[in-house]
Image 1 (cartoon, rainbow, N blue to C red):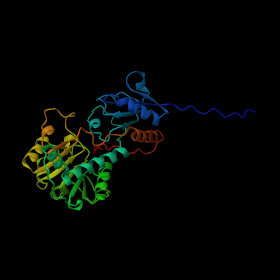
Image 2: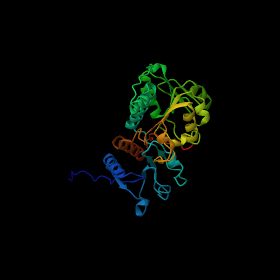
Image 3: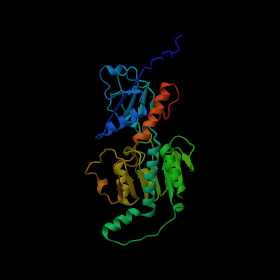
Length: 324
């Protein structure tokens, strides 16, 4: 009598494309983290050739337009970045394939940390102390309480909620704003375009964490800045295209806006001749407010890929009509 185990059915390996635009050794680092999180997968770095007919999942970081066209078995597109505006701008992106964006818990925490640093800097005038040091001036100024500083957080997604919660824990008077609808938030919140002017009128610091969509592109314009109290501050950690640069510079030059902390720009790297580099009322970061952590993000990718393969619901699936 044969007591050996029956042969197990062969499981077809999962073929995944890793595609994007990378700096230095960034792609290799991502591949190592993703392969460790999904050891059952076969990874491809090129969609051309016979593998085009095998690839079922694409893990992407703003790949060049057209890269995802011509993959007949493609069933899931998983972005490594939180923003998907560049992906959605690709007219060849397969419309019928589900797209998921990255929501990385480590990145959410890092973004909240940067927002806290910016808020503390603006509230306590640490940027002015830095300038005084460069000029050799001993110039202490009055210190206000956090609950006397009204902060508006625009965008109540994962990053916005994490940021608002941390700011409230430090005692700031925080109000959130969502473009489309009131959503569950850890702070008082308002929603819709009609509610924005009144919120701006009472906000000393505005932190932008909105997704970039047709409805939010260019939202931070002359009218937006004019609605703020004179001397208010902007912290833009979302997308450069949210801002009309000429309007922001005019508001800074006139004193309507007292300071701007900018991490993102329409053209990156920021051109060397741009006025932001040398403007005394601008603190500039090189799109470094929150970098995706490959280790935690790879775990998010693995969870979504396995959910897709088993027919379960995806995390953070993009609503293409809304753009996020």
